[in-house]
Image (cartoon, helix red, strand yellow):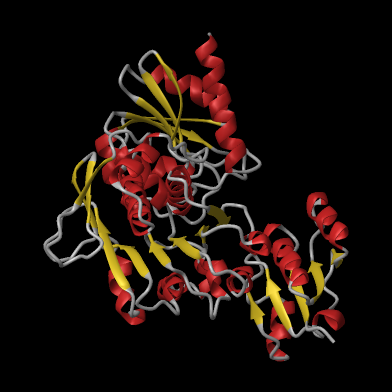
Length: 455
């Protein structure tokens, strides 16, 4: 009798895991406590895989030999607690997929910048002609791609939730961009536990692998030694630091050096980033990490510079959406936390008219005050409750006003800005008070700018 695998959650990762498990000869049952989207229901039905929605039937689930759980299901969920009690192994889709591929997995994690770095790394490798797949948190199932397993490389964006249930999975290249407080409710409100979830990306790595990490990040510096692994260490920095044997660093705003054998006096590879459309300091870090991945994969200077110039980032991440009378309008709607907004403000060289606000996630705005004082000439608060923003920045920013309309926010931004300024939507907050999600917020911003351009 074939081994039974139960999949909890029937979105992209769960359905991909179900299809892979079936392809490998397991008996498969899929259970989702919420309604299953039609596209995924059709996939399961077409494959003849049994499923349920709107409930978890414990009697069925607890007959599993192994369970693959969606990254969105927390450890404290009753179904997970029941499985733990029965000592039934619970793994992630990434763990399952890793068993069935010999491809090199380039795995990227961090609190901010994961998607940009993942997309850029994938773009560089693909443009250079390598057989590469894009997977993980960017919305494509690694497990489903592993069924055919046609790629030599996979570039995989991994959240801490996806790493939580990995055990034997081994990355070839692991990238850790930064660690700042986020999702702490899943980690007993402990930054150390959250950091260790991120550092799990280095688990099982050996001398054939590469760990690319941000030497400028204080939490990585603090926690890194506790998981030191026998792999090739490739630290990077925005600066040429004498205290580190760096694999990558900038020598100017648009020139970086890489050396895959840090400490050995090899001639560094010099790469220009002048052709890259990416804006801001954190994107310089993301670019450096992606370039190091490309170098490990064997790309040369010309291939990397060419790929950087043709890259287009995902929407809502410091995305230039229009220019009116010498004023640039930048959509950074994805900046739903303080750290992301800090990077956006820090990366702007021009005076800023800042549009911020939304659903406050217990934000502490202290770290933004010096940047706001130095760079922000006006703050437009866009939310149902703007009192905390006004209290935090009212004495710092020369002009503060509020609105609950994106069209009005853009119109006021244009009126308050002078030629050479930037109108920056970097909300610092979740979007759920006035918008469906951050994408809806970003689209409305871009639409309002586009309508003004036509006037």
